[in-house]
Structures are given as structure tokens and as C-alpha cells.
Image (tube, rainbow, N blue to C red; front, side, top):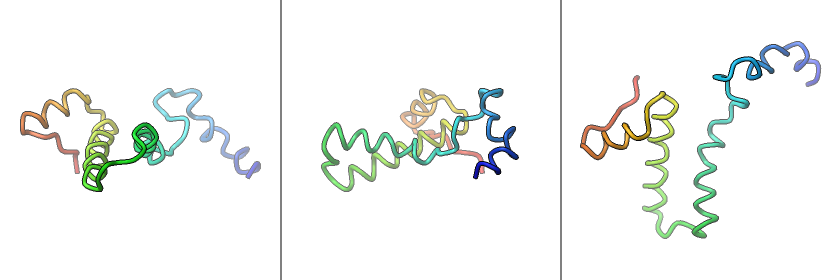
Length: 88
């Protein structure tokens, strides 16, 4: 592993020179972190339906954020009945 890190040094340390590059590539873990925080604060979700709705909303907002959308604008568009949809 050390040899590979040494030969790929520029790729591994790319985030140091370009702030647009994330420190890690574990977006899935970051997306799930909020679910774990919610479980710790409230103990658990009250219903399976509530957990499903929470996950759907968080997934929608996460996708919008990754697509460079404003969270406020995306939420406003949903409330107005014209939800933002990601590019395909």
C-alpha cells in the first residue's frame, strides 16, 4: 500500500492544491451521518414510515447539493409544487 501511495502521490494529495477536491471520497458515509445523529438525539424513529420519509428528503437534498443547487431554492421549488430534478 505504501508503494502505491508513493507512486500515486500527486493523485492522493490532489486535495491540498485544489480546494474543490474533497479530502476523501466517502460521500455515502457523510450522507448517512445525519441519520445516525438523528437516531442518537431522539433514540430512534417513531415509525418506519417516518424513517423512510426522512431518508427520502435527505437523499433529495444531498443529490441537489452534489449537483450544485442552492438548498433554499430547491426547498422553495418543492413547496411551490415545481420540484427540482437532477440532470440525467
